[in-house]
Length: 303
Image (cartoon, rainbow, N blue to C red; front, side, top):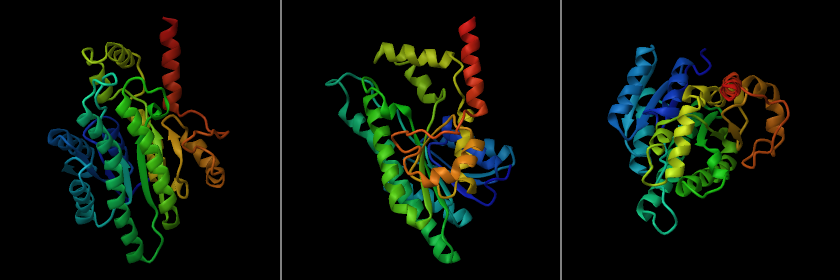
C-alpha cells in the first residue's frame, strides 16, 4: 500500500468497469484521482466509492473526445491538486455491430473519435502539465500515461470492426507518442485488458445486431472470466516508480508484477520486448489473478 502516495491521477471512462477498478486501486495506493465519464450518476458513484474507503477523488463529466472536455478534465486536476502525474486513457465505446454496407457511418467514426482521438487529446493536455511541473521543480518529470488496449486490435476483424480498428490505432498512437515523450521523462505504455465489463454485458444483449457475437459475449459472462479488479496490479505497477524508464511497450493484464520488477532492466534495454508486436520476454509469469482464472477454467472443464 502507498505505492502512489502523493500522485495525482486521471482515469477516463472510470464510471464503471476497468476504469472504476483502476481508479479505486490507485486511491488505495495513496493517489488522489480525477474520475471522468459521460454519465454523471456513474461518475458520482465512483467518487463516492473512493471517498467511502477514505480515498480522495473528484469527478468531471464529459466526452474526452472533445478538446474542451479533455482540457477541462486536466485543468480540474491542476486546480484541485496542482499537478498531473498519471493519466489512464480508458474511455472507450464498442461501436456499432453490422456487416459491411449496413453500418451507421456516423457511429462508426464516433468510435474512432472516442477510442483514438480522446486518448490523443487527453495525452496532449496532460503532457503539457507534466512538463510544467518539471520546469517549476527544476527536475526531470516522471509522468505516466497508460492507454487501455485490447487483444481485439490484433485479431480477426469480422465483427466489432470499428472497435478493433480503433484499438489497433490506439496501439500505434501510444507507441508514437512514447517515442516523442521519452526524452522528457514521460513513460507511455498500453495494457491489454480482459474482463467482464459493462461493454461485454451490453454486447451479450445485441441479438438483433449479431446473434453469434451476442451468444459469445453471454458465454464470456458465464465463464467466470477475470474481474476488472483482477486487471489492476499491472496498472499500479506502471503508474508507480517501479516502472520508471519503461516506455513504448504493450503489457498484458495477466503479467506478474514481481516478475516485471526482476526483468525491468532487460525491458528497458531490449527495445523489442513487449512492443506492440508482443515480442515475448522470458521470466514473466502469470499474476496470481491470472492463475486463479486458469484454475477456474480447469475446474469448470471437469464438471
